Amino acid sequence: MNPTLLPTVSRREFVRHAALAGAALALPRLSRAADAPPPGRKLGIALAGLGGYATGQLLPALQQTQNCKLVGVVTRDPAGKGKRWAQGAGAGFPEKNIYTLETMHQMADNPDIDIVYVVTPNGLHAEYAILAAMAGKHVISEKPMACTVAECDAMIRACESMKRTLSIGYRLHYDPYNLKLMSLGQDPDFGPFTSMHGDDSWFMGNEQWRMQHKLSGGGPLMDVGIYVVHGAIMAAHAYPIAITAIERPKARPDFFKTVEEGIEWTMEFPGGVTAKCTSSYNENFNRFHAEGPKGWVDMPSAFGYNGLQMNTSKGPVIFPTVNQQALHMDAIARAILDGAPSPVPGDIGRHDMVIIEAIYKSAQLGGKRVELDYTV
Ligand code: NAD
Image: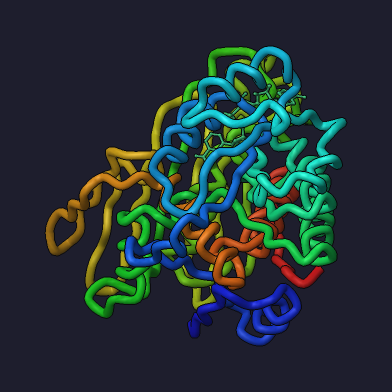
């Protein structure tokens, strides 16, 4: 395995490298406090979609960011929610910075807004992201990047054509435990890892867009299983070459009519390395385990906002709590201010979508091995 570090390459270069190396990976860089912006220059972020994640995580994080700040919103409820956010959220913002899907094109005339952060249901990411790019704004899209590879391509094309950066909401690129996992994968006392196991599952009890395929693109795999996909890629320092998957039988078929309730898949990496993974809406787990020839790492809590845990064959690892979302948004804003490529570019999200499509394809084919081709 010869992993290639490609945090700043264009899509064309990336595809070429991936084809050559078979194992190319865009790796994260940790935001540093020393990366302070020039005095007085904070980029303006408009949040599109004011639901649980925007309200519970991004809004408080935007009160800690150094390189960006909340300056607007896109909402289906401009007169109610929009005005409440303008008056109360953080330091507040002018009501002219409240937009709807229908008025987003008018952002082109609003210099307050530099970045639109799309936090809507998955099935709407592409539409909002493309509208934002066409209005001349940089884009951050929450995970999963979109519901299909074709949508990812349309988002990448829109941002490239408008010369705007496209970033993905992979907050774990700014989590010290996940970064440690990555570094242990390259530490000769542990890695390269040969065998990995991961599970990200939660018990879904309430009716919502996540169980409507049109808005979610799929069940727990799209929602949280993507963290296991991405965690294995980070730990392996490579992209998988093949997938096998099976959908679990449904315990609540009337509840999960159009999406899977649970799914199991194996990612096969170059050199015979494997990751056996699970994601379900019927139990509560959030864990990852990796083993190499000389050592192991176990994360009983692997993918949350905080409270992560790590044990290794050399003892426990403990980091101070960080605000993943603040570090993530600051790193993206810093890159834009510096004229640098995104540290979490759309290519990474597209690669994960290629893998997710292959997982669903294998499950539909009853567990048949599906080889991955990232170039199409
Ligand atoms: P949510 O249901 O709490 O919020 C969704 C928001 O989108 C709501 O404000 C809703 O009004 C709005 N919306 C706009 N158009 C809509 C439509 N047609 N139907 C339904 N809602 C519509 O969801 P959430 O948990 O905030 O998730 C939003 C996005 O953020 C998803 O893509 C999800 O995967 C992602 N997310 C990421 C993380 C993370 O840790 N990175 C965590 C949670 C959610």
